[in-house]
Structures are given as structure tokens and as C-alpha cells.
Length: 336
Ligand SMILES: [Cu+2]
Image 1 (cartoon, rainbow, N blue to C red):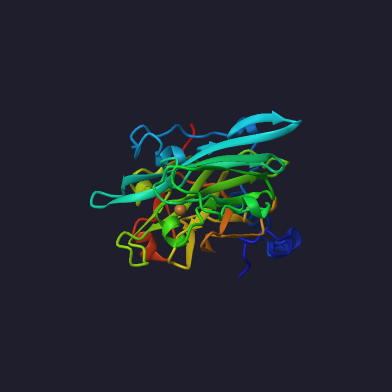
Image 2: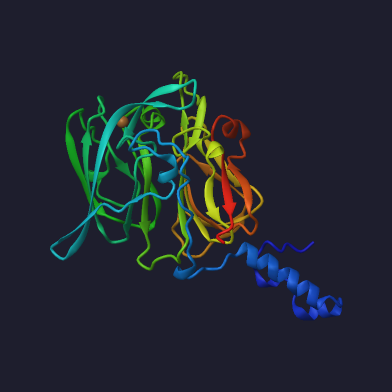
């Protein structure tokens, strides 16, 4: 059986082959529909539509609103210095008690009061300046993935009450991350000290509804196993409050797995397929699937569009992880 999910020309029936079978019209139409669905239109900016924020989705605290965080990007404060564009970010490490569900509250360690920390975003070649203040009560750091000198690699402890500056060039473009690098790193990450760091390519990607999902785990009883998991900090938040997206709108998902203790987690979307841009470091997709496997700290850009309205689940296909809180819904709605 031919695989119509693969876009390579050689794998699609050509018109002559279809004519021989007497099914040119039907065959071409069907093949056309499949290709159109799997390769959503690179929509122009005029057709980019983003649904309003659901009014009933609650915040955890004024800095921590999982529904807003889906589309919240921190571009920093832009400055010009010696003809160079500087993006200045301010990050404070804190200790905050967070209600993870009706039964469990956890003393978390976090950046800017939220888990994950802010999604920092720049363009390749920008100068990044991160002013980091540690008010967390323990030594912490910010270690960025990317290319930079050793002295700003974020492994030197910043004592409680102290500040430091990490300054480096944003390179290479892709979807990256930052996290605390104090030992035991498992503890500092799983208590909440991590976030996404997006470096856009100099030539912008086409317009899309861009969303962020960061997978994390919580070791509540400190037995080096996770008891709860979440997308964007709060277990099952998007099960109770689905993420609205528009039908046929190109979605660009920035996805990061920062689950400690479990070596791998997959990500699966229901009733659709996505195009894969590994580590966000390519401008053309390298494959398509409905499930992708990620080790800890792996991340990708996934693009898709839903042709039908309705609610569709997304979750790791390690169902024990999904059923312990790492599960959500897209609510695909008609833009009309
Ligand atoms: Cu730390």
C-alpha cells in the first residue's frame, strides 16, 4: 500500500499510472487532499488568526498563568550599544509554594515566580545580556544551551542574595533551553529551575500561531522518581482548560522535554501528524510523524494544522507519564 503521508514525489501515484487504472479524477483529488492536510498552507500574515484567551482559565499567581504562558515570549529590553543590538533580560530565582493539584502543594524553586521560567527569545546574532539575581535561598545559576565562552556557561554558583550577568551572542538559531546547574542538577531542575530559550533565524519563519509546551516532572517525596508531571508547570491544566487553536491555522509548537529521572518521554498528538524541525535548527522539515521521542533536554519545532474542529488530546505515549498529569487538549475551533 502506498504511503500517502510521505511527501516525496516518487511515492505518489502519477497521472499516467492513475489513468491506466481509470481513476485519474478520484485518485488525484484524494491524493491532493491528503497532501494539503499534511502540509498546511504557509499562510500569509493577513490570514494569521489567534484565538482570544479563554476567560475562565485561572492563574497560579500573577506571574504564573499557564494559559497565557502558551503564547508568552520575553524579547527582553532592546538597547543599542556601539551599533550592536542588545537584548537585556532580568531573571530572579525564587522559592515559591505552588498548588500542583487539589491535594499537593510543593515548595518550588523557579525563575520569575513561574514554571517553566520565561520563554526568552532573540534573533541569531543579537547580544544577550541576562541580569540574574538569586533570591532563592540556595545557590543557583543559569546555564544556557547554545554556543558561548566558558565564563558565561552558568556553572559557577551564585550565592543567595547575589547577582551576576551572563552576556553572550545568540547562536545558533534553534529552540534551546536554560536551567540551573547546581548539583544535584536533578533536584534543581525538577523543583522548577528551567525555561525555554528560542533563537530565531535571521530570515524569519513564515507566520504561524506559535505556542510553547515544556514537559516537566515533580519528585514530590524526593525518592528520585516523579510522582507528578506537567505541561507548563501545572499537572492536567490543559485537560481542564484546553488550548484554543483555529481550524486550518498553521500551528508552530516549540516543544521541550525537561523531565528528570525518566530518561525519555515521547510526545504524541491525536488525529493528526506534525512536521519535524529537529532542535528547531532547520528551515525545512526532516520528517513527519504523530509521535516523537525525546531524551531529557531534547526539543523540537513541530508544525501542524487541524482540518476538523473538536477537542484533541496531546500527551507522551508513556501513558504512565501522561496519566500522572502530562496530558492536555487542543480545542480546535472555527474562526468564522
Ligand atoms: Cu539551582
